[in-house]
Image (tube, rainbow, N blue to C red; front, side, top):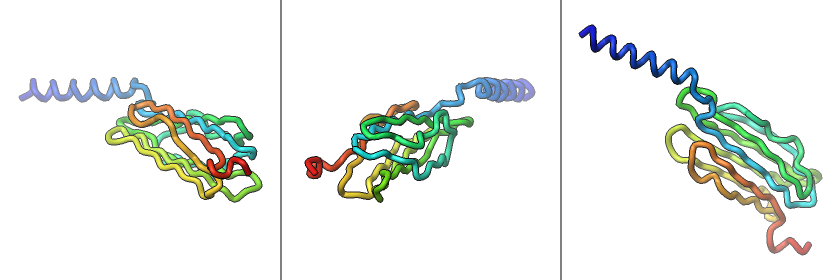
Length: 146
């Protein structure tokens, strides 16, 4: 009985020691936003429900420019989940980006535009532990000539 208890104790201690030295970003998401509009995007809000910011979302993303941010897990067996909202300067159009990269389960995103005049699209990041996502914001196809 003592031999089994000792083996269990050694096993549990090894898990603790190795988890303390493990990469804290077992899950992460890198998001690059491409602003393909003629207006500056300004951050309206940002929040992490799980994880930590490795690079916070930029305050402004200038016309035809891009902005980058990264969130990552910061605990044992955890993921990262957050939301970033951008607004077009001098316009009421709001763009929302939600992401959830769990330790277990499926990667998910929700992106939307509050305006029919602009569209938001996502490329990449469909699966994996450390995902890279490209978000593009541009005028809707039927309005590009306006």
